[in-house]
Length: 455
Ligand code: FES
Ligand SMILES: [Fe+2]
Image 1: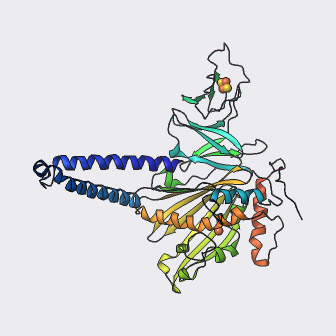
Image 2 (image 1 turned 135 degrees about the vertical axis):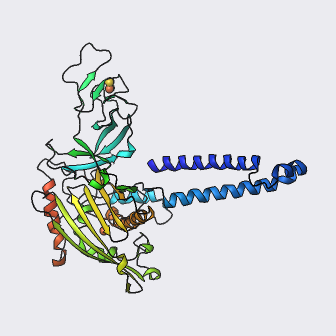
Image 3 (image 1 turned 30 degrees about the vertical axis):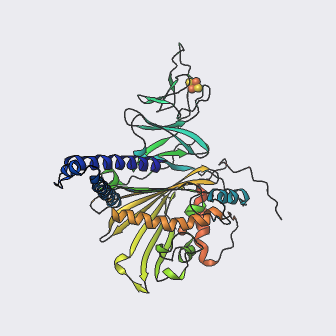
């Protein structure tokens, strides 16, 4: 959504600039080509020259715009749920292929679907003062709004009075949200109703559920606990972002049809790296072709270790990655990259980059369950402001290509509660034990299973 709005605006702006500059060029003849004189003399004969000038000006402007976007504008890649990871054969549309895969899939014996923890709802720059956004998180509809004082709040979207959606037509008044139906106003801080325009008194019970939330690292996050417990840990602040040393260089968004736990489990699944992520990023994301002979001269080699962190950070784990690039069998040490991927709770990962000349930065990888088997995954990159934006944009793009290979697996797989593992897979079981701390007895489970015939 965000991308289409931005790109539409961009196109309209470029068209306006193009028409305006072409008009000015033709009217004022800044380089003294003699157009006005020529037009007067030749009448229609000047038209081809004008058209050519318009065309050249247009192409130049578009090229300038394209170069500007390439070098300076943040990279924004927002995929819709059926865009990536489905095989559409026999002339079927991708949407149809995605639908069929989802309908036919066997879910397996799933762990609870909504682990306790912090989840990203949106990025701060998507929410201006006075804005209200409707977001689906953990199967709930919430209204995210920013009060006039700049503070962001998250409340249940449905008004407790008669059920109108506060995020659809609701208005921010001070630090409250006003329902579009009868004008009740709810305080963002605690959800309490502070005004009913037609009632003498606001009853004590009038309130909307308010979600514990925080805003850190340029993101608005909510806390979920199935028993309503208070947050057990905080979202770590990346100081370089708060201080403005690392700046926003882009984001990607994917919707993945899988159980949430399957996504972080990837970090402990060391064997898949050599198989799925070794072909060079030039081989693309479609697993049917990534092993093609054409590109086999480029390889990524990975050395990975996964380990949980000790108390008091037992809700964190780390994946230490060493990446090496080989071209025609020759190793390019200058492009060796070490990354620490620190998982914080079930839904947040900080991928920290530190390279001698490519600079430092972080990709925040956030997984937020939308529904039991639909995860919204965003990658947001902040990078040293002194490094040309093209570098972090390339890193994000490369990460995105590798990630989309996993998406193709996740979208089509089944969850296996008792996997057939070998000794070398042992980190996967360790990861499952570590992840189980985010479930409690009352954690919601997927009850409804599609009608299938089990043989
Ligand atoms: S439904 Fe919200 S004020 Fe009536
Ligand atoms: Fe992977």
